[in-house]
Every structure is written in C-alpha cells, then in structure tokens.
Length: 599
Image (cartoon, rainbow, N blue to C red; front, side, top):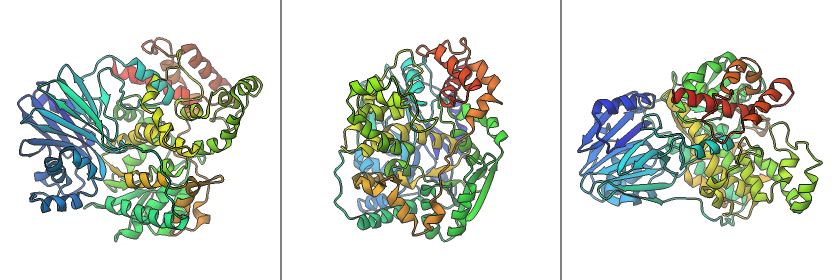
C-alpha cells in the first residue's frame, strides 16, 4: 500500500517531499519523486514484497508515467494477455502490468483489472492526466482542479487548502463522515468509486466518467444449493488471489461470521499456519475474544489475542486526528488503530471480513427494516397523528423512536434516515447532497436490497473503507477484504433475498457455508460489535475535554449547527440515563479537528 501525489503547480522536489512527509506512514519504505516540465509525480511505498528497486514509482513507460496505490489481484492473468500482445516485462510487479495495460487499452484497462486501487497516469505527449479509482472505493483519491491547476493525493493533508466547506460540514453532522464527491475544503473533491477522469492540461478541460456502478437488480433463477456452491467457489477464489504475498500474511478474526469464513478459507488454502488476530477488551460488553478463540481452535490457526486495556484507547486520539485528516466520527476507528498498531509486529498484510454485512444483509438496520416496513401501510396523515402519542423507541437506546419513524413520509425516506439520521443537529436540514446517492433506492423493488444498495454506495465507501484504510495505513499495514471483490457484490445482489435474509435470520447463506468449516453452535453466538465505551468516556475521563470543545466559541465556524440543541443533549447525557454519545462525539470530533487544522 502506498500514497500518491501529482501536480502541475510549479514546486521543488523538496517541497513535494515536505508535503508527503505529512502522510509518510502510508509508505515508509521508499519515497520517489519525478519531475517532467511542470509536472511533479511522487510516490510513498510500503513494500510487502522483497523491495525490487525496478518497480519503484513513479514508473515510466514511453510517454506515460504512473503513480499508483493499491493491489491488482489478477495482474498475472492480465500480464499473460499483454505478453500475447507482444509486451515484455522487466519486473514482477503489478505496477508495470497496470501501466502497460493502460498503454495497450487506455481506460478499458479498468474493465480487466480486479483489485483495490487509485492511480494517475501522466501523458507527456498530449499533456493529459488520467486518474481512476476502484469499483467500491477501497482506496482514496482527493483532487483539486482550479483554473487549470491540478493537485491530487491519497489523503487530504498534503493538498493546498481553501475555505471550510459548510455544505460538507452539514453533511458530516448528518452522517458522521463526508461522502464523495465532497471534502471538508472548498475546491477539493474525492473521485467517486468506479469512476475515472481525464484532465487536459493545455485546454484546461476535465471530463469524468463511470466505468462501473450498481445496476438494476435482475434476480438470478437459481436453487439455494446451486447458489451456495457457486458463492463458496467465488469466495474461495477471492481469498486465494488476496493471499498472494512473499511476506507472512494474517487474518483479523472477530466473533463474527464474515471474518471467521475468510479465516477458515485462508487456512484451508495456505500451506503455512495462518496467523489470526483478535483484540480483547476489558469491557465484556465489547469483548469477542472468547468466541474468536473458539474459531481459532477449530481452524487450527496460529492465534494471537491482542489485549486492550480501556485506558489505551484514549491515548490514541492524537494518532486518530493525524491519520483521519478530515472529520470522521466512527468511534470504532480507535480500536481499529490499536489493532493495526499491534498486528504490525507480526504481519504486514492482513485479511478482513469487511463487506460481508453489506452484501449479505447483516446489519441491525436490516432487522429494523423487517419490523418497520408494515408501519408504512398506515396512511401518512394517520401516522403523523399517532406520532403525537407514541414516544417510545422500538429498538433500544440507539434506534429510532416510533415517533421519528411515523413522521417519515414514505419508506424510502425511512431508508435515507438510516444513514442520515432520524434526528438532526442542523438549523436547516439540508438533503440536496443526497441527489448523488438517491438513485440507489430505485434499482430494486425489494425493501432489503434497497437498504443494501444505499449501504454499499454511501456508507461502505465513506465510513467503513475510510476507517480501514486510515487505521491500517497509520501502522503501514495492508488490509485485504475478499468480500469487497466486485464479483461477490454483483453475485450477491442477484441472489433472492430469502437466500441471504430469511425470517429474522441474517446472512443465511454465509452461515451455511461457514458450517462446512466451523460447527453452527460455535459461530451462532451474539455479535457484540467493534466499539468503545463512548457514553462512559463522556461522563468520565473525557468530560472536561468535551466541555471545552462544545463551547460556543469553539463551534463558531460551524454555520448550520443547532448549538442550543447540542448543549441540551450534552447536559441530558451527563445527568440522565440516556445515550447521546454518537451526536456528542460527532460534534466534538469536528470541533477539535477545526481547532487542530485551522490554528
């Protein structure tokens, strides 16, 4: 894994190096800088193979120069096709394959590669820059294009900053992250997943195109046993191609089905004993280490329990604000940072189960959907009246109240609220930005698939993938997620929903595949999640810090925040048996981020 940079703004090599020093953790093994005319290309390398100097980047072939972050898992197959076309190769890297593939096919190379990637190619003959991002947005890519000046990077910190983007801040206060194409700064955007763009530096023109996206669902007429067999084969291949490495490779193993299945398959493929890693918490409410230990015993992995003392987690806040160089309020990023930090001494590459919940309907909000859907048979005018008399919650402290559900005009509005909140911290509740994502509610007529599609396109890229990328890169660890193989996503979407969610049984087909490796009575235990005791922190060790950063003067730059409401929630949280930690954490992170980055 790496960090990339490209710009046509005149700048010295020393200045480029200083910029990339801000994200040096992404590639501590080598910094390469190439300057041609006014173009600067730079690359930070994390070497997961024996360091072959010939494959260092920027990599040049003919008039093309490449900077690339990621892994092309099927590069050997693409390489054979290129050899048949007459290309020769000097290295064994996927970097050379990617650039020569672009030389051969242009943007059509994107249809041939399977991986996680963000890359830029500079064509010195026609003065163009081509950039692209993987289908599901595993790897990040920020860019600024203003008045013919281009600057792009894997992360935000090295880029020239403008004013704070107040629209992006309002979105963040709704979701807890800033989705593509927005960023926290005016004039800097994220390239959305599955898209590529071309910049003509002479003509001062930019074009952006999509090469992959979710399509209208056409259900596959297939028996359950056939579906199970085909999916099993596909997951095996997705794991197998991600096991290609000349260094020891491990697997994250929680108490969940997804990581257990990935680890089980990896163990069955790998000749050497698979290293598995679980983080253990003092707080039993969050600890899954005993279940993970049972999994590890069954598959006979070389298992490592990484103990976490609760006091260790707050100490990671400095790293959190450095690595997540844009406001990001998923508190599970903190234990993720700790896990990767401690795993680094054992392996450089780790498999994960990320992505299984999205495609196979595992999250709690799929259960919300099952229970709530019949309520929308009640006419809206009657629901609005009933909302005056039914204040209680249906799903515990963290779920939406019946009142908030009843006040949604239709079921699609309820789905949006799963991801944008059932309550608001905004003075004006702006949803114009949802135009980038609303179309994903109309690709399927099935209520669960609607939720899954918005989950894939909005939350997965902008929350889950950001969390994993930054947490792993902070410790120079490469995480590979077989369930994020686009072939699995496409296959799952075509399966009848009942194969994935039957009655109240979520991830049905994955459970049945996993039972080939681990007995059901072992893995059929309650999932505890991967979180931190935020609610307690706010009342305890973090109380003074929250009091400081939730003051009006600290929040003055946030134009659309309902300050009185956040103060009310803070006081209620401190004095009552209620949990507003997710809202309070969201505002605290934003306030502290603004303080740290705009001194």
